Image 1 (cartoon, rainbow, N blue to C red):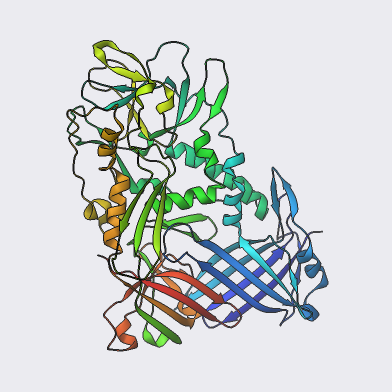
Image 2 (image 1 turned 90 degrees about the horizontal axis):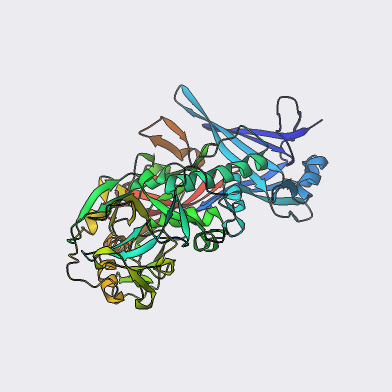
Length: 551
């Protein structure tokens, strides 16, 4: 009969429950399994660690659970389980013992049951003579890392992935479009929308997650983070003005090509750049200044850069220790880098934030999908259409350009058009990218779009450049950093959405008026949690906060 090990403890306003069970095939049923209660004192140390790299944007290191057991007081069968190697779960997935941590938070006359998460013992244990130490990684993180894009397949085009023939055209107004009308025998292409692609990755990650935690009904949601980006159509006129706003279902990228010989090929540029879906979603978040974080046991959520709709509210009396580093965080420069180096001839955009500083700390933001025009070499031109329009074949295609379906001016037939080079991003607190780097239309009249220099002029007005300008303004000031220690039960989340919950998750806002600590300190009260080390046995949490003053 299946067995699981159970440990429960309470202190002040929080109860914790720990359950450990073996990894393997099939669902694990607690109701029918044999429960073994660990003796008091068996668990010597239990720590949860979360952290971002310097700045709270992108994908953090998701919660990592560190457990230390007293060998003399711990059931020998559990020790043997923790020493076992990973189990082959099929489909290239390996998992170890599963550690599930739940909590109950008491606030007034109410109590809230919250799942802290499920963790997978992925690495070997450390034997010290008296104790056994193991580390377990959050199951979300493990599942996303198992979606290896380099060894991944997009499947095959389905009925919803409409085929079209693709080539570049310089039309009479100077813009480059991608048309579906081409002489017979040329390559066909299929596209996917961004939601289709991200749902595909989420489905793959969900399969891995369910296998790891042994629960076929488990949920894993990544949220519709793409909705924070606003893309636009182009207009028929060459004045560079923004066209109508595009919905996410309108925005597509090239997923497959199908040659005249019948060979199907995938967008290798997309798949080869990433080691895992974890890396891919981390880049998306950094591009939009979003913060991923895990929430309960249903998936990953995100916050926008200035969001404060979930927060922890602390007072000076809650702080056991404080190290206030006034104006300590200095960002010296911004680098927005392109994976696809053909976009408008731009490989990266650099902006200096502060001159004369000795800080070498730079913020690097990777961009995969973009909307800059392709550089078309003169030697790639292969013919003319009616009206003297020149066209070029597939070598000008970019694996990371975004398109939408429509008709270019006067073409009279179906086209794939490049999304306008400008895009906007919601940042929270009523702010968006355009508040820091306003859109200015670039008149393309008279430009020769077969010249790389002309492409670069358009690219200089793109989202990529505006993103660098926005970051330059946001991080122009030195930021105050706090290292504090607080009782664990003070990390209780206030939410504008749904009551209160236990929380110790970096990425969320923290309200702590500095002048409550000492009156001579600056009047800063809002911060974002960058890292947290929660000691669940000693009931303390060490937290690093970064100033979140909206500029």
